[in-house]
Length: 166
Image (cartoon, rainbow, N blue to C red):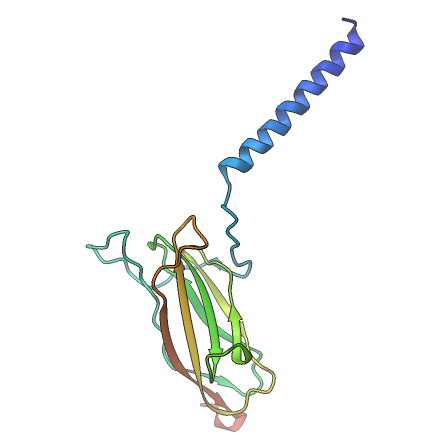
């Protein structure tokens, strides 16, 4: 084998090793087709893990009534998945009615220890009292099809006119 053939052989072997390494890495870090929400960020929820907590339980965050100003484009809210949960969350947020027409958010999966912190509001949101309906769907960590028990809650959203600020 001459020098040129040896170099080509070495290059081919190195390329094969590189490709094999990339394939191996992808297989080891495979997410089983799970799609995680790109707007979810690391979030330190104020939810404390109880001492007797087991990994078969799921903690859901609570929400209080809130106020915004008329014309606000975003609702700043922590749609969080507590870090000690052994489940991914999907969030659905509705305003005034729980139907597709009033849906504000239908998230992808949110990992434990992460949160979506902004939800876009409709441009025509009028001043006054509105109801926000929140549905949280938990899923096992490596499965996007096996749903666990859903959690539903709601809270009041007061949209204030500028002169009502206070």
